View 1 (tube, one colour):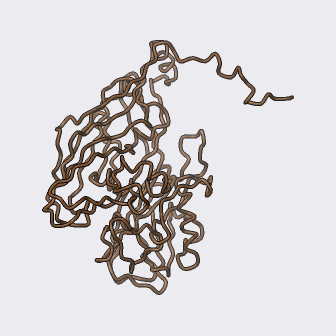
View 2 (spheres, rainbow, N blue to C red):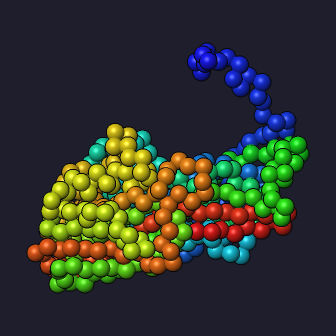
View 3 (cartoon, rainbow, N blue to C red):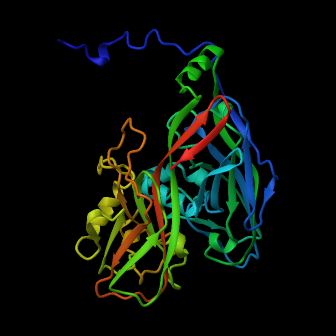
Length: 426
């Protein structure tokens, strides 16, 4: 049977139209608990109106940042500046916390360096708050030596709501609350002359689609006999362990991340000592000094099967990193990375600055089948913790290091459109 090429199928979709009564508008939500935030640990709360269907990919936060210093030197902001002030992101359905991402600023700094190339970061430079769109300005932010510096930021939100693969049915859910927690000043800057950071004009923006009654009846028919619908999303879990000084040989770190569907594992190997000015979350170094290897264990199964060796082939670790977010559909040609050779080569002896951080990240994908119609595509930890095995070879650490494990995992939202209750399974 001869098939007509899609390019010549002029009838495809010609009769399809949006349901009558469909409209879309942009929502702008301001914090419900204040208009100015500047205290370490301050929580910024956004309550999303129970209206329509939220388009997940449109959600972003915009705000104004004012830094006050004593004026003795230029200030140097770490990481990806738009995210740097926020140490924690929490999503609440009704009264239930369904997601809490610690080290939110460090996580998003990793994501922007491993999912966007230099050109991509250049295109986002204005919103993300980088010093400039030049390559050397795509890390951190240099704030001129002055008593007060004010600048604007805008950033995509990365949470369980923004990562849904279908429209988020706000009208059928309990109150959705998003909270962001401010980090301590000393964690945001490589210098200590600043006396205050203040965030104002905070606005959470997203698009909402509303449909007519006929469409709502179709949505109701898609629920089961109890009124439940399921929506797939994904989320991140982070946890940290301290590797003490003067250790070598084989070390095994245990992380209490117990999840049903783990898609990727990722580590920040925190810098230490006076040479690593960005600290444990924004500098990541090869703690084996090119002499050891890295391997993860989930439910006693090694990932990858052969340890990632910095001694045998450090480029192989970089290659694994390029596919750690994409499941087993490795697309090296399509991978997007913003890690320079000198940044990836960083070891314990490397000296870093705010705009030349260490980026020796170690990551591996664990997804069984990407882009699948099934709900859970990752591997289960089977209620056991995740292990990271470190082989140091002949090297011994000279400083203590904070090791942070990031897990990307599936999350299933169960929403009851009759009772407006929602829960999450991870």
